[in-house]
Length: 281
Ligand SMILES: NC(=O)C1=CN([C@@H]2O[C@H](COP(=O)(O)OP(=O)(O)OC[C@H]3O[C@@H](n4cnc5c(N)ncnc54)[C@H](O)[C@@H]3O)[C@@H](O)[C@H]2O)C=CC1
Ligand SMILES: O=C(O)[C@@H]1CCC=N1
Image 1 (cartoon, rainbow, N blue to C red):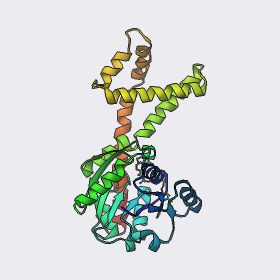
Image 2: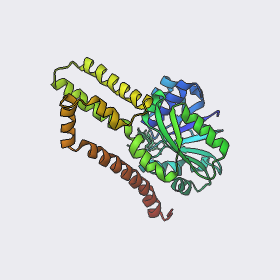
Image 3: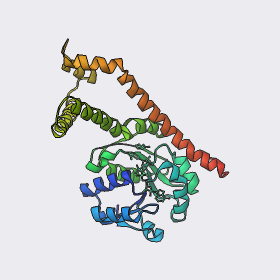
Image 4: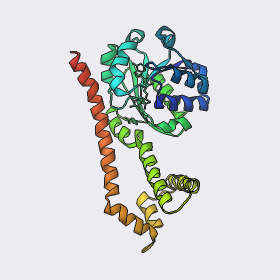
């Protein structure tokens, strides 16, 4: 790949640019980016990663090997309309949009595109994304390998059926936020029980890293690993009893189901926008 273009320059685009750049697969100058209107943001990305930024679509899309759609789902229809003149049949499109179907992208673009739908997460920035990919029938084996290679530089990549991407979005796309939420709670409690912020932070992070490594290296189920921490009549049992009383585990299940449902709703949004414009899917 010689030229990768990002349409959208937000958190997800930056995470990918950072991860891909650090991996060495593509040097900064082979990555191009544009956004809606925030020139300061583009300047910052140019300086930080040595990438190229422009609002000149002729320049942006010339000889592009792949185009990454990285705007919010609500902005997707408008953005695809704007770039439509620069797209041609068979072009490789990588969409990270939550919920938006491959059919919807092709319908707005009015082209037969090779679309890879990807659901990474922001840990791509440090090469630790959990990414799932789904492809349409226009994607050649070589293009699929190319996109897999690209996402492998920013973490673990797996192929799923397109219908499974809403679940992936609810689970691992949004997943880092659930973990950060837990850490926020741990930090709050640390302050209340008399630990200094810096000390607590170190302990929390190492605890997370250790637990993640245990889950990776041990062949034991998470419930068994939890059982091994929980001495009868001990501190963990006392703490987990409170979590159970508050229904925290079932709250997490509901959280992931609701995020999955929202991914589906975001997809329908674009379908509704198309229907309103008399171009139903
Ligand atoms: N943030 C995350 O953790 C993840 C986000 N995603 C997906 O990535 C996409 C982007 O999300 P974020 O980066 O968080 O959003 P963001 O709000 O940080 O960035 C969106 C970008 O799109 C640009 N944009 C909007 N309309 C445009 C247009 N017509 N032409 C060019 N650029 C346009 C904005 O200027 C902005 O740079 C979303 O579709 C989201 O579903 C996927 C996985 C994880
Ligand atoms: O919150 C969102 O909609 C995006 C998709 C997955 C993570 N962030």
